[in-house]
Image (tube, rainbow, N blue to C red; front, side, top):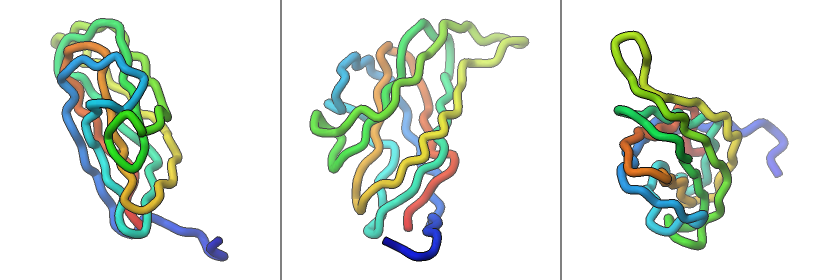
Amino acid sequence: MATTPQYASIPKNTFASLTTANSALTGASAVIVFTAGASGARIDTIHMHATGTTTAGMIRIFCGAAADATAALIAEIPVLANTPNSTNPAWSADVDIDLIMQANYILSATTANTQTFDVMIKKGGSF
């Protein structure tokens, strides 16, 4: 264990678009959002933003050695029904995840409904 604090030294603000419905509670067919570096990574905050009208649903976040059924479900974020217009913004959410990832692990995501969401690492990076 380190005797001094470890901070992400290589910032990564990667993102991915979710478009295909996937109601599974496993990481099967999940979209890769972030891959940790050779020394691991830290993710503090994830930002999710709809690009249009949404219906009630869920965005699921997974972490594991691959973006497949072996990845662990680590967060579920409820999506509210919303119709954006000139006075109502599209649905969005920031999630403080406070995750330390081991080397080369993958953070992936799915959406329960066929709607488009951009999922971005807002605060994070590799060691």
